[in-house]
Image (tube, rainbow, N blue to C red; front, side):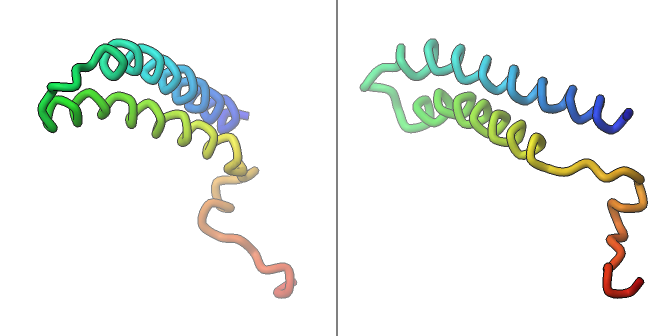
Length: 83
């Protein structure tokens, strides 16, 4: 049960944090940007947007990843043919 709770916290943090970063940085940094900015400034403006997108995708990855019942299943997956 503890593994599910920890995973839920990580998923919530990634999704909420990622969407927040996307919305705030997308509005203030990218939309309010200037066409006369240098390449460095443009790259720095897009860095939080990419970080937010990465966090959202990582949150969805954690949703799809299965949680093993016991810690041994992280490292050893018994082959059904061996039994």
